[in-house]
Length: 390
Image (cartoon, rainbow, N blue to C red; front, side, top):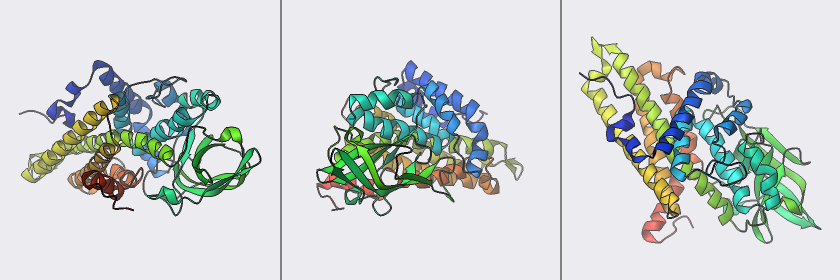
């Protein structure tokens, strides 16, 4: 009789698809999280606390903007970055969210669309975790339809005057710099707004049932005066912020695999130890059916993530392919988290075990960076040529 499989991804030998360097990066991130994050997660989640002081440690680890080139960034390939996201979200979605927003939204927007002066000023400090960034696109009344944004920027001599509000902004309450998107007479433009700028306020959103070990804020701008140098010079039109979102979605499709794997590992361990009717509950057919179905799903999700990562490394990935990955992997992960909770029974509602915490977090992941409905319509348009949301 063999013991339980420690890693359900070993079922299809997923690690054999990775290079030695990729496996080492994944293992290094996992060790850091085991030492510095996992022991504290129940307390941080219960107290709705994100430890700001861990940012420099994540910088030393090299995961902040790790897929970007230069300016103190590691310049790793797409799959290596994805595997880091996998391990981060296996710990908690809040930590993967922090790293995604820092690197794939705030830093990427500066790296891709900023001036050389903006890059030199912000990217090295952000890569080191000395400065934290956020990304202001979603508004109180405009989430899935960012083209309707009401935040406006108007010219006043050589300056810009910014007015409006942004909602559900990860890192917003602790950010040193915000990338803010606003409508102008010339179309959508991006601006860098430092903390402390007069008229700029960030208010933390409390009483969340999800992503509790993460900080979320509402940003408001009341006649915020910005110099011309605050504008991201290469960002023209709505395609600029949408390209940033595509970078973040890529990390999510790996991260969801991590959350699902962690839930399944927890259920496998619990099922082997929990005795009912004089035998481990993992020995019952109904439990094994649940475990087998979930293992197939998480392995399929991992294969999809790695395939899309290789396409991204080749410069061949298309937006609808990222939508396929985000839609499928988050949908499967949340189903796995809920099913694993059933195996744990009443113990599953305790913070001693991760599945319900992951399920709560994944409710947010299912919504942000494009709802499941929007990604469904993106795929539908790719199939039919008809944009159903217009």
